[in-house]
View 1 (tube, rainbow, N blue to C red):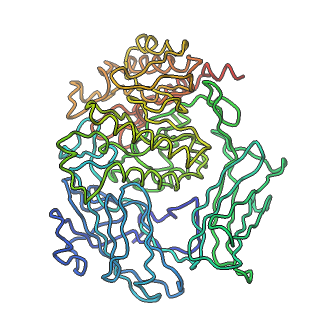
View 2: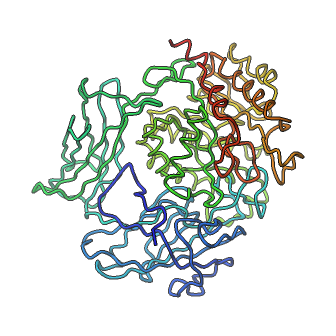
Length: 602
């Protein structure tokens, strides 16, 4: 039987040796969260599940979409005999509060549903023998926590909230590492100075004589290399200069990726760890209202991509499905995406890097900051603090995804707002803190403090609004003030003053097209505004709305809602199963005419 989702899960930091643990695990639902008291750490579990698919999904074999307070997993793994130093048990994502036991002993824990974590299990296992791995994931499914579009209140799908994801939903895997080993590097492309700057953190207790080396490779040829001693630092820095003859840019639609090889050697010159990565040489700069890639204006024709699948929910059923979503988007004329309310699988970003597809990284913050007094006071503070957990998870997402050249901007929050004035100061602190943390972590990319609705950060890098006006003439009236530095803002929410930053309409459109549901019943089917009466009316409305934003010389991009239908939300360019809804040549032609801002730069 083939192993599901067996591709290497960490494409930006690759080691040769690893063991995929996807496939069949024992499984049990623990609605009373009493499993530890009932001895589930040491017992066989009642059911079987297919990892890495969440138990709510059809692909898991469980297909239980009810609230689940906790779930348990168990599997016996044969540890390869050659793995003699440290052994790491890696989870790409497990939602939400995870505890891991190995051979009956607690080995580690992690809080957060979107980001990877590792547990060193060397103390509990012997190479060449079996390891019994037990995982408990608590979901707190009716309480406030960052969950993105997962429904926290309703039993099933409703409006723009969808089936929950509980427990393991990305790849689980083992890898051996040396006692002192490489961690994920930070790679900065410096186009101005024609070099890559690499910061290479190390893990372990250290020893005298360690050296870190890096090579940049093009088609098997080393074009730059550097080495540095690690004696006096835990994060050595290297500069790798690229000669003019070897300079190739990563550009939207025309990407080039350099291979990078990393090594850690000891005092005797022995290689004790090595890993491979890659990087793209490209720059991002903001000049006035202009958003420049490699010094050029490229209008960002973004689509809202929520990354949901009918059979896998937040987990793509296959590697091909991830790649196909990008190809479908590009076939429709989009060159970019807002990865909406979800930290996407890293394999998606890998394919975006390879295809030259721009993306904005976003955190799935919904469910965390929409606080009301009753719920907030009822939270068991021993379980989790939603705001604190958000800082932790967003920091982990930034660390994981920093090196992907396809990411051209960050946005930690979406449509954040608070109508209760007693909580506005808390939301302001959260917004400003996340913005500052993002800028400190990554000074190379622009940051939008919150997409749409409330803006608290004065003079943030980017300014935006959401506008689902369905009449192109009225949308044009709303957007006309941008020419006089009086842009449209979402009027019912607090917004910091506009100071001439690059501006885009980061959500618009959302035109429903589902002729089988003609009554606009939200419980069964919905989109924004009244659905068109015919395909011709759809195309006319779509083109009219697109043209308003393409023709605005002060607009650097837009984001159309959305790539696919998602359950009952039927406003996608494609159906939920990715089948075609429209004449894609017509959709592509509407979107790909030269934008006004691009004409200015010619």
